[in-house]
Length: 610
Image (tube, rainbow, N blue to C red):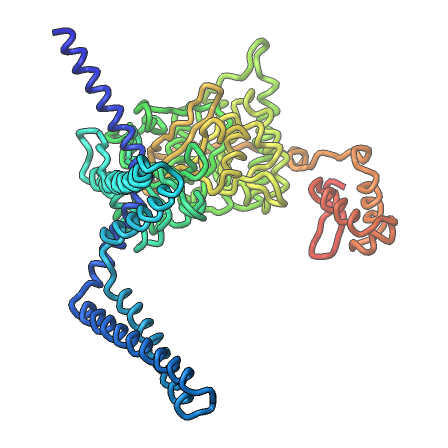
């Protein structure tokens, strides 16, 4: 009995191995079978009775023309023998008749070729002719080079082998892979798996401009359906991404179904991922007080973000950044020991929170509130108990969360407030004043970066919704982001995020809970934080840090001296400093970043830090 069970188990394992091998080979032969079937179908459609009649007429006319041409040629040869005069009437008449007969032969031969194209042989009979054409000359060559006993063996066996290979390739290409999938697929998933089948895919790629791509059998993951795609010819992963609408049309999937196209495990392959399910499916994602930030789509666990974090919240337009951030803002404004400050020069988000937070929506308001925060922070730092890292929040000195919505606008329009915000980012934690910086422009370069370079390193917790490019993903989540799977540029949108808060964080997509503007407006009122400050405190909080001239390069010092001396254009600075125009331009750019000079068009003046 044990032996029988062992044999049965071994047989099942062998069968499974063979099946898996055939499944792996099938996609490679699908294009061949598809081309064969398409060509066979084309030939079958052309083999009509009208085309057959035209072919028979063409064959008859060509036969007659050939006979006439042969007769005319014979008559011309006889006329040449009968007369030595090439200008004689008989010879000239025979030559004219011969040329006319051969011209008619060429015409009927061309017509016969066209008729054969219109009424082609079946693909099966053509294959037989090809193998026969191979067998006969190969046999003759073998007879000439071998002994009589074996001259027929290798040509026949080679031809038979080719026939078998051709048939095997067709069988594999037409074979339906025996994909074993979850028994409890939804109707949408079953339809998707059927349409991702290599045979179905290849049969419809021409209609959708996707010819040259071949799918492998689909598989089911905790997040949905995935299928590898072989990219032939000039196809690349980027080109397939650009053809996403054609892929959706071929598969007939709904518009809002999240779909990702990523690079495969080796060159020439891509992977299509369809987020039809996740571990968050079925979870209660409705927001209510005390609910976690979101649900891990891989593990199904709730993920919360506690207060006391210095945080970056990034996401492109339409990623759901505002909706996903509002539950965090609720937590930051709830309870007797928590207050919220919102800096929002776009004014839209700030307006929703006016009854629960101190809001600043103009450059002057931003400068004023930042000055108050800096004064509060400096006072609190003197109160940190010896042996402790932070003060303890109380109703009298609550935790203050400072939320900057769309930081690039602050960098551009309220530059004087950046000095104070940088101080809060560096030193605010000990005073329980936490900076949250939100942006849809996650860059740290250019004249108006979305994340100032002095602030970015201080933001230890990162919440990234979908961003536009891999470069932005690395800026937000770190240079090692993609190597470790933090692919924020591949997140579906809206409402999916990656949360990185330490070395143990996992790059699992989080399905976030969302809070609508109307829900925010309906929340109960909360005390609004403010502080009185003196003009001296305001000036101190917004004054740029002095720049030491000795830290500048020689060219930069020369340019700065020229501007101080009254030079107001690049040409004037070049004349005054003796530098070439290229060196002047580079030095002006560097000094502008340090706020030592300011440019307005072509005019150059001293900056605020000078």
